[in-house]
Length: 362
Image 1 (cartoon, rainbow, N blue to C red):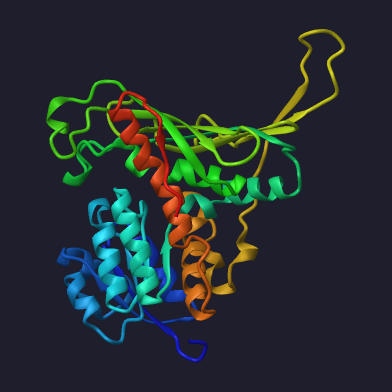
Image 2 (image 1 turned 180 degrees about the vertical axis):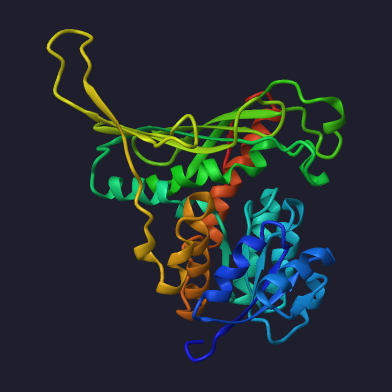
């Protein structure tokens, strides 16, 4: 691979359009093929970047022997099926989150990766956001001390979006809140109690038989010492501005996501013991976040201040280099399974009124 540039296909040019120019600029990437059922999207991207290799569907991409790898930015219900198709065609696969919407689909993807020998990477943005990269750096430096509790939240309003969103179980798409917490602790969630909350209007129940606009869960993490994380996920009927947030409560310091996205996060540090009962023991300050552009090749630094915490160029670079270097990507099929399965099991728990559900090990 070192002597040959990778030929990449991007399938789905809604969200996928965010990645076109990043792949185009990467020094290890050769030809780019764009694929979408909407001709207007193909025309727009062709006009913007002069890309002439175009496809109308995934079958055209998979039958093209020149394409080495496929980046799927398609609808959630299609992820597992299309991922298995890509791997089965002998091509490397990057896929937007979540990996799948059932445990059986996760297991089928893992089997397809092993059978194909190709790379699979789930393109989880939060793991490469500057917020996570900074907090992870602080954790490695020992700033937090012992981590005592974790919290994640992802609120968004999915009214009037593509039909597959209507009534989607919130926890099926929880990786943006789950992944940074598990990645930070390097642990696996083993058990969950989850509760559905609120009223979801009747016409949204049909596709998935899901009655909940919001779900909130408590997960227990593996390890000798008890450690829990709380995750809340909302898709409908919640008057809250969009946020993908995580908070880390440590014995010596706490990182807390900002309430309003335009503000900066807060770092609390433990100070000396108070002079009297109830005296304040922590100091709080808003912190600025570095861009982490130094982790990128020179040609991708221009994208480091982009959306989702600047994660997109990091994801592209990691996927491409994992193929070039013939190594496992940072978010391989096992990591993806460990970050996707908790949400699937959480929804199962919510349907059962909060009953304990154990999360499989992959």
